[in-house]
Image 1: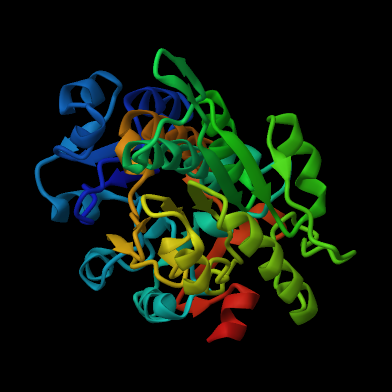
Image 2 (image 1 turned 180 degrees about the vertical axis):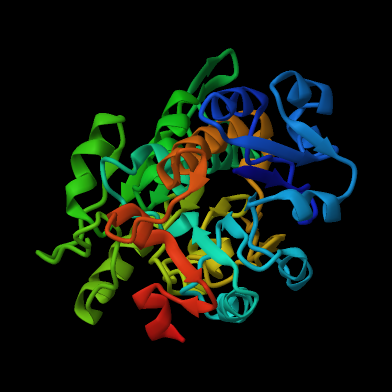
Length: 376
């Protein structure tokens, strides 16, 4: 089986799906790797390093696709990249096929008779943990969000005892205590901030408190957690109590980092314009849900804007800004997934297997994932 890795077409994307060490390990399992020349440059991996690991380097993207049985990408394919895929090729990529804007991509991939494996749909199970790209990349996003906030905030993060008096620490509110939120909490605490966190899933309270943050309680017995551990849509009554609790804490915060997502849906609005108005001038919001339109009503995906004296950061490429480690983590996820899908050096799709069944979207000209089929 030959795996092809083209250069990412998305502007600003510096990560690469496989690093040189991954190429060596895959080669030992009868999986060959080809890369488009320069594919690893953004992550500081040159072609010679890949060659030393056993990879072949293709000068053109067309040559890469012509030889590949499996194509790895870090970003959802464009119409142009889909047109390059041969019939029967497998594409492994983040796809977010339940989102409305990606439905045309699903249809195009099925029409092209491409086998599509969406890494964002890998089930959240213990066995699949090493393949979970959403968690590995969310770790980086949560870390870097705090660094961005500290750079944008015109205040210190830690408490300082100075000759000019005592400087109070910054107050940080983290909305959503998943992987990104917990990493943001830990990073903000290490920088010396006072941290509070909110999540609709009560089970995360202990994790939040173990990192030294205070858990924001909502006066309700409702727990908006799915069996798979993700957040789900809450009731209207809960949302009203939630909004009141969040508003009380947002107005006291110097920094708000929002990470709340619901799979397949628009990100919930947690910070309204009125809440932004209540914040002190110079405060900062980093919206990690910007790719799904954002948790703040004033977020503009891909941009940093100032509204009512508050800087709102809706940047979309945070893991790419830590490209070396982000690539290493993503590559380990891909190694585990490829070896799970590979048998005797060839792609083998076992539809009885929960992981394979959960992330297989299109195959042999059909949309085969039940939830995506229903969405269509």
